[in-house]
Structures are given as structure tokens and as C-alpha cells.
Length: 386
Image (cartoon, rainbow, N blue to C red; front, side, top):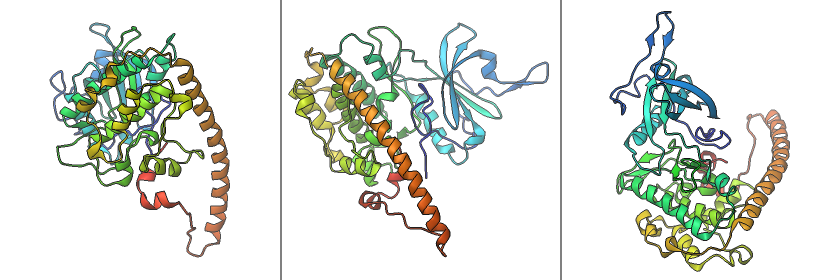
């Protein structure tokens, strides 16, 4: 079963996939500074990497199974960056994903996207030096504000759409848009919102489709679950979900039992509502904007350029959404923790029963019913994990 490992830009508490395989020849292409600098020996005979020659290593920002992210400081001018340190020994079988992530990052130059600044490689590690976003994650920042309005939400979505329109024009699909991957550049009141974490990104030509199931459950598009091929529209679906969360504090698709089976069924059926209790003061324009993105058929879903022309992005609504968003956001988080605790107990009991069945079976196999959704999506329900 594929696992999407800890996110390495941010606080290390979220999950995402990291590329991998032996990277000895992964960086044959020149870096922005001209070429890939290989490690060299110091006078003491100890191997010193070019990264160490040019940067001071700083505090840890996040960690995953294949990589760790730390703050670093360039020696020449004291400029601060983030460095993703990838352990090459852990990269078996994922070389192409590493190539793709680097290729995508090297193409990007946009104020709302965290870009690649430098690359170094030693015999054991690859160092990807990127811009450092110090303003915090999307919701962490929102919750520190004194007030938060629909106009504020639309301004954030506009920045996100501008970046995605840029990426889509370059035939780049992010494939893992979610609040945790949206960071503010700095602590300034008017700081830019920046897209991070391109570990799942892909280049996709017009008319072609991607096949690998990936993403984060609450933000994954129906076509990914159906495994019929997907492309740029998956990012637009995710923006629809993000917009929904920005306006009410909870995701449009969720399951009372907190299972992916029920969640995926809701996504496939596009089963969401604007509950009057929470949406009474939200404008009709906002709801229309979301409806144009949360469309099951990707061919009917609004593109980034279409969405940028929607009237809601010009809203002047100043109703304070902060109390409702904070309340709902925290309530769903608490609910999820409680359900996870119950599910953990149930999984332990089920595992114990399965082991007994396994031991008593002459064939050495046990039956594990998975439900209709997993019958329809045998790989997606494994590849897309919480």
C-alpha cells in the first residue's frame, strides 16, 4: 500500500508523497546557478558538500520518511532559505518522481509559488534549496486576525487562482492543493499567499491524462477516485473545496464514521450542501463560485481563467466570518480525533480477529470485505490516504 509521507515544507504534521530512487544521475541538468556542484574533500580529508560551503544549516522545519526540511542561511549575504534534504538511500523506485519535482520547480517563477533557488548533491543526499515562507499556514494566519470577512476570503482565492492559472498555462498540475500547502511569504499584513509542496506535481500536455491515484482525501477530485485519467481540473476541484472551507470552517465532503469509504462515496456523488445554519450570511455569488468548481464532470468544471472572471472575486461583503469559521474548524477537528480513537480500537480488534482467521486457514488467507466504494476503486482507496 502506498503511503503519502510527511509534508516537508511546514510543520511536519501533514502527509504527502516524496520522490525517490538513487539520484546519482537525477540532476544531470544544470541548476539556476549554472551547474550541479559535487562534493569535494577538505584539507582534513573529510568530504565537504558544496551546500555546506555556501550555507549555514539552521533549525528543523519539518520531517518525513525520505527527507527533512531545515532553515538555512546563505553565507555570502545572510539570506534565509528552506532546504529539503533528501536521503538517497530511501529513494528506491521513485527516481522519476524526483526528476519531475525538480523539473517542475526549475520552471516556476511566480510571486505566489515557492520556487527552487539552488540544488546540491553528495554521495548520500540531495539538497533542494527553496524560498523560505515565514508567514505561517493559511488557517494559522487567519486565526490570528482580529476579523475575517468574505472579502478577505475572496482575495485569498484570487491569489491562489492567479498562481494556478500560471501553472496550468505551463502545463503543470499541482495535484495536492490543500490549506496546509498554502503558506504566507512573511508576517506582513499584505503578505502574498504562496503554493508549496510540489511532490505530487506533474507536467501534462493538452489532451493527455494522468493515471496515478494521489492527493489528500478531503480535497481529491472524483476523476482521481474513478481512475479514468485526470489533469488540470483536479486543481480546480481542490480550489472549490478550499473556498468552501475558507467560508465556513469545514469541508463540503465528510463522513460521520470518518472512513475514506464513506468520504469517497460523498465525493463521487458530489454530495454537499450549504447548510442554512452556517451559510445564511454567505453571499449567493460565493455559493455560485463554489458550484462552478465542485462539478463531477471535469469537462464542465470552470478553468482557472474562467474562475478569475467570476463576480464573487470582486465582493465587498464585510460580514465577520471569524467566530463561525473558528468554531466549525475546531469542532470538526475535535470530532475527527474522537472518531479516530474509536476507529483505532476497532482496527485493533479487527486485526486480532483477522490474525486468528489467518492462522486457522489452510490457505493462509482471510476474507476482508471492503464495501462498494473500494470494489469500484481498489487502487484509489489505497493510494489516497488520510
